[in-house]
Length: 340
Image (cartoon, rainbow, N blue to C red; front, side):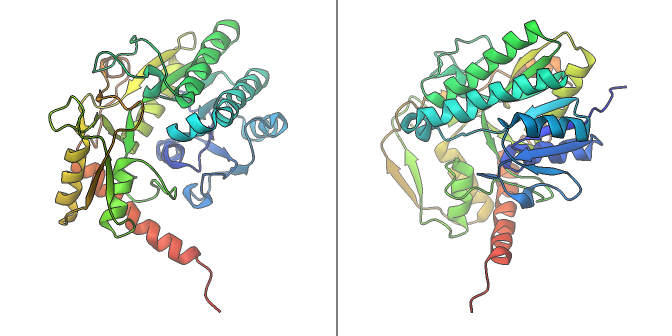
């Protein structure tokens, strides 16, 4: 029987972090959140879960949280995630994603926290020569976002060799969808994720959907990506934590994806199908650095963890994203100040 240690979720008011909080709470783990609310939302943290508003580089705050909550493990989601912004403002990403992670890891070592689950990314692979991509593929990030995440993986690996700490780095592919009970979802204004953009357009929040590149080496000329439901991803984090606790001397690095890809046009066709309306598509040039295809080789996570995805269906992912987008409209309306 795994001891359910109190878990601190950094960035737990954000998209993926809030789903991890739900997965932990649903499974009976004691959980607390630290988030500076720069991109997170207070409403995303479930009632009864302690929320500390602050920054992960605040060592005094972390020490207080560790003491007050008896923290035994960390799930680390806090950071910046917009790839083009990382190219324009690399120092922001090396600060938010790398320097702050270093401060968090140091606080964990000092506070005796022995297990860290890290939110990493397939961007650590850059433009892979082979797809599906395995964990042993070359790590050649082509932007500061991917490099900032890879640097944190390296820090965790070196720290685990020197201290009583183990970690799991989970490299995400394209995360999409929302909690099936519509308790949380992708809430960021101006989000760039394709499915988020498409459901916004389907509900009239955008005029159209831009398609970046139609000349890729794929069956329909548009980029192919591996979309994973955010709740399946959150479930993988809980199972990874159980694995770290069960084998304290072992650290893990695993891809998180379904091992199946869909093109941009296939995703938009699915949104049309689910919503019974036709999205307007605006074809444009490629974005720099977008690979033709990025699909996970997920054999390692399937062999290592008892992970059984529950939502590996594109229409279901879109349906949950759509339901959340409708609920988000209601939340925004309730938050809006009344006109005088």
